[in-house]
Image (cartoon, rainbow, N blue to C red):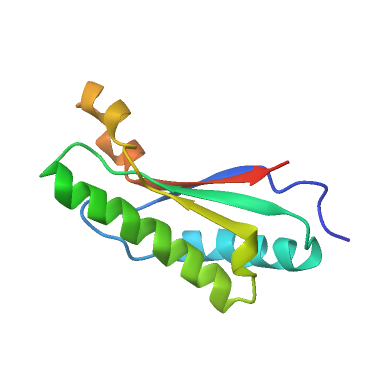
Length: 113
């Protein structure tokens, strides 16, 4: 029996990278099973970057991070209609913080109720 909700998860990435870490794959594997068992469930996948480097490149990086997560889930059998993608203008928060920038190198997955 699937969990009543998957909740929210943060998947963290290395600086300037969009490759999935092994711990991210484990989370996504369990999410894929959840979404396959609960066909009416939908998620938002939102990409973020830190404030290091050019803003235009960071926007592309956020998009790639979002897409690699979505593609991984689709390859595991999740329907594209269950996934909303978003990567626009998500590094505003990181502009305020110069410490702990790794916290902003992420994709946030949120279940939509």
